Image (cartoon, rainbow, N blue to C red; front, side, top):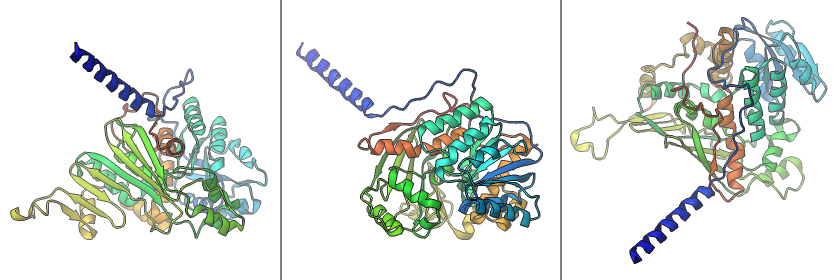
Amino acid sequence: MKFRVLLSAAIAIALAAACKQESAIIKTEVPVRPAGQENVIGLTAAPIENVRIGLVGVGMRGSFAAQRLCYVPGSQITAICDLLPERAEYGKQIVTSLGKPEPKVFAGEEESWKALCEQEDVDLVYIVTDWLHHAPIALYAMEHGKHVAIEVPAALNMDEIWALINKSEETRLHCMMLENCVYDFFEMSTLAMAQAGVFGEPIHAEGAYQHNLDPFWDEYWNNWRLDYNQKHRGDVYPTHGIGPICQVLNIHRGDRMKTLVAMDTKSFNGAKIVENHTGEPCTDFKNGDQTCTLIGTELGKTMLIEHDVMTPRPYSRMYQIVGTDGYAAKYPYQQYCLRDYSNVPVDAKAISDEKVYMWGELEALQAQYPNPILTPELVALAKEVGGHGGMDFIMDYRLIYCLNNGLPLDMDVYDLAEWCCIAPLSALSLENGNRPVEVPDFTRGAWDQVKGFSYALAK
């Protein structure tokens, strides 16, 4: 009898502990999909022989986009918009100076972009504004029958994320985030190698945005980026770090992010930067100098994402892939490390049981596993046109290529949601004592419908 009482007590304690652990996870809502909507995994639309582009925002990033897009075959910039008329005119001059037809100009009003979205000669609205305007413009554009491509981050909170998902599903229009880092050459080569099994099964990955923005704060119109960091806590700019590793881990293509937990430092530098740039005292700066977010997946894999724009550490997006049989890293120098005993003496295996590839050996290894979209012609054109070494141009080229051919885009609205949600969900974890937070299934049940990431190619 005494044994049964003790056993019952032990079971009760175990159940209480389990319930406590379960309640520690902050649940997030998955809205019911509106009636009549279906998921947009593998979404295709009618081919567009010549994609007519409406460019919104001609600031630091937008002016470069105007130049790049003029070199992308199968497209034409037909409209340009900016709040500041002089910037819109500058965008028009970029286009005409490259021998292209003069685009319409919309400027001078807070919502001049609405007129651009309403134009019949616009198929794609390409959004390069400050972060606060990304989702509102994209939603309005889709309401008026336009595909949208949105600079990072495309959405700032869960309401915007679900609104973009629902609007894309409702209209059956493409809604893609312009995440250029998935098109960097090392990342694309490493993805091809991972898909070929070179690293065994990828089980952990790391990504980051570590970039000292001291030289750039004044470049952001009306101080919008520093102001956003001052008012918001969490990893507010996660997409460069998480995008490439999500492709390797097949997120919503056989696996999904399940839980995250975040930690950050105090704001040691933020207030000082505000005071140096505005001349005004700052007593409340919310974002920490360093934020770390750890993510677990449905299949038991992990990701680490970091954000730091406040310290003088060297630029890095980390980009590390850990597999059961290999490892890849881009920073501080590119290297692969594989299980390879072929050239190691038997008596040395105990202390030297892997093969490290760098420099020429690394390039020779990459050449054995070519990425299917990196043709010699595209690589040469990308390096000539430029944009972060060419990856921006490849991003634009692939977007237009898929629209020309009626193919699924490389990144869909669920990628957008998963990569952007790190910002609001990391803030939720931080503001609740670093508690774990449930990551919603943005596909609403279709996360394993497709097996593995792939590029769509015309036959």
